[in-house]
Length: 252
Image 1 (spheres, rainbow, N blue to C red):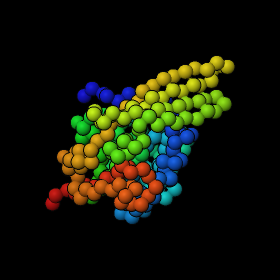
Image 2: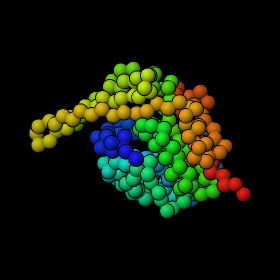
Image 3: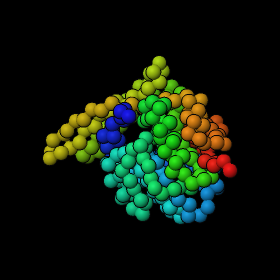
């Protein structure tokens, strides 16, 4: 299968994610896990953090005595993850193709990481891999940004930060016709007293809620529920921030 994801995209984002984005993201994410997932797990349960990024979620779960394995496709993200969550087992791997021998009690994928999977066939591959990695009665919790979020937050929004040796800016554009959002990223890095500029366009796919539910069912999951964090859970996230939770039930 041809790759539509360039993992060096994540490498470029690693420092930005680690220093500027992640704290706000996980202040929003942890309350969702505490409502939807953690009450259904026993102490010491083994959790796979799929697209674990810089390891901040992994570290929070380690503090609660869960066993954590993280997998991510970016070497630079994992460099930070090894610093932020040194007790987690961390694996460089592709969400679409991973096949781990270990079996997990739960798999989580948060912060819209699976929006980077750019077509429904590859998303189905991800869900199949997750299903195979779970123990019987295992739980899968995944997060997607859907149309409402892309429409409200990707209409030319500009953000950025300036530091002594580093500066970055992003502009987010969403095309509702092909359901693709693009992050136009510019990074300046100070190297040996001169500034180096890097420009990158990073794409995300907006999936309809119905597409995600269908792909989960196709992979074999059952008891699938979806929640809008803002409308259904009362958690401070933008509308269109959707969580899906489902189970691997093996027929008797």
